Length: 315
Image (cartoon, rainbow, N blue to C red):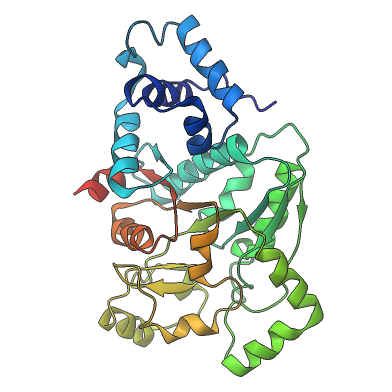
């Protein structure tokens, strides 16, 4: 059994949904990605521990949880997880990765196929997984490999680390992330080994994706050499605000202006809409527009972010 009954934050969230918002236990279970008996036990433990008496004891509820629920309603997301602000960007990424790991531990179940993108935050998730059970879960990369630098952010490497952490299986995609020509891409998709993994990717029911800001000179795509400052200028002119799986979109989530997307090898960004849970992991106020574009495009339905970015998303 997943050890989540001691999770005060999850317990309080269940109480708010059940006692204040009148959601049924089955609805709560579906919303939080846990079983109905687990919801029942969480509510029972909340009573026994004094979190719930006649009303929810607000002493157990933080500003973080209030902001989470506001964002869930405001953005129409299944769940929002807020982490503490950190001054150091590298430390902030670790906070986000830790929270994403805990969410995966809570929600992953036998039979799941978990698709993973690339990124400097996503690559840190595996180190925080404290799973003690061996799960019948398969991890797959959502896109091909990135450039010659930053092998640690390669989707295949991230998939290997997560599979090891969860005791699951994995499939690897041995193809470039971006193909020089659409015709070459079409031929590559027909290759037997490639075709098999692409079919496996289509079975993804949980996706973990980073959210980039393509007009930021510090972006992963700039670092890996997939575009230069001239390309960045073009993206600004076309009003790109974000990218997921190396595919660009504007503030409304539209992808049509960006021909580059057609050459990305792997899942098409529109296919994310049909995946049950798509967990967007991104922090920093500079990511707010990229997150909003992803929400408007319905590319994510779960968000892990930091407090200041969460506040900006409400404005």
